[in-house]
Image (cartoon, rainbow, N blue to C red; front, side):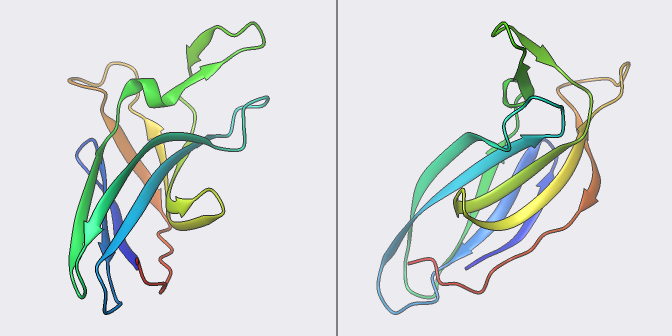
Length: 130
């Protein structure tokens, strides 16, 4: 089960709980969706495998980098858009457990990549992470 998906600093954080009775492994995935025309519906930007004991909850922290928000134009060149993005956490592209919406920090904002949260619509499933 995935829950408590949120932004903490420049990281997406969420919990994975093994609600089963056996040791489990889960491959989590982070997708980024741009609302720019001509961009893919979503792009896989990070993933990892965790081991979870029966009844255990593991907190996953995924650092956000500027590279995750680079887009491609029709010539294959990259650019950065300050528009809105959707971050999706799940066990596959079709099995999303948490969704957050963000925009890059406005120009002139100090220090780091600095995303700021504009809305949160975390939807967590009740499925076991086995």
